[in-house]
Image (cartoon, rainbow, N blue to C red; front, top):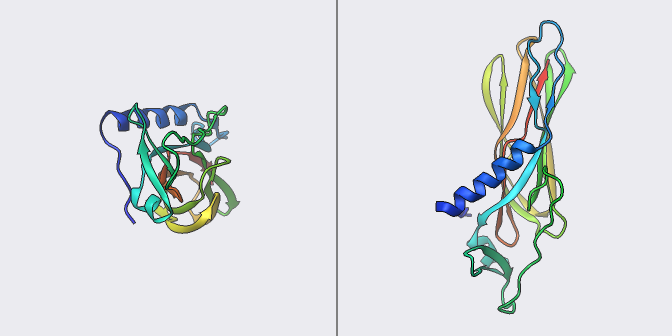
Length: 201
């Protein structure tokens, strides 16, 4: 299943939007005690935004991708009236994009163990997800590793997963969503930009 790409000025505008969404998303400094060093800022939740459309997925599920007079693409059921436009999401929380929100949390379990909790939730009215490519980068005293959560979905509107790991000793650990792409039933491609969590274990 291919994932469509977005290029040129339109891609630059989209990436700028998601970047701003991530920067203004909730940021909390993890408290630091003696020996931990300076506190680190976590952005546990960040927006997911539309970055393009997968025409093959849309076609396979009875949708077609149209382009409006401003060059913006949108997905509609095949056979829809020429002037039909789906309603756009109204977003009032900077942690929620026009697709939904993504998140990553870190919990300390004792004995230098930590648990990652990551996932996403689509906005009400969005088509269900059929595919995701989801990778979380983990940084601890062993170095950097990547935890992958790629999977197919049966038109789901939310997803979450957990992963437990052990550091080599007392240290700060960091988990960050570095790839967060979700393809919806109607071909919409949603992109999550960088929720990140820190925890001293």
